[in-house]
Image (cartoon, rainbow, N blue to C red):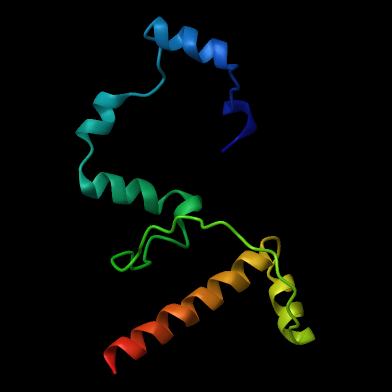
Amino acid sequence: MSKERIVSYSLEEIRDRIARGVAKSDWARVDAMTDADIEAAMRSDPDWADLMDVDWSDASVVYPLPKQAISIRLDKDVIDFFKGTGKGYQTRINAVLRHFMRETKKDKQAG
């Protein structure tokens, strides 16, 4: 999105616009869109480029649980790998461990 189109409003300005019934959303146009129109719009949006063909049918909502600080020793190459994936590497390590935990529980319940 080009910076010329980005507009900022204060909370008070937003409340005032809502009170006056001023909105930029064209809900009639959105309501008239077909699934094919929506998919075409998504395919032309670069923010969706890597997500269009992902199978979301097995997705689940993940609610964050409280974290507990611990000290753990990991191999240097493991740490380097996760750090190399950018900010949030500890969260990704947690996700990998959670996946392992769920799969292990699944195996035990099946067997």
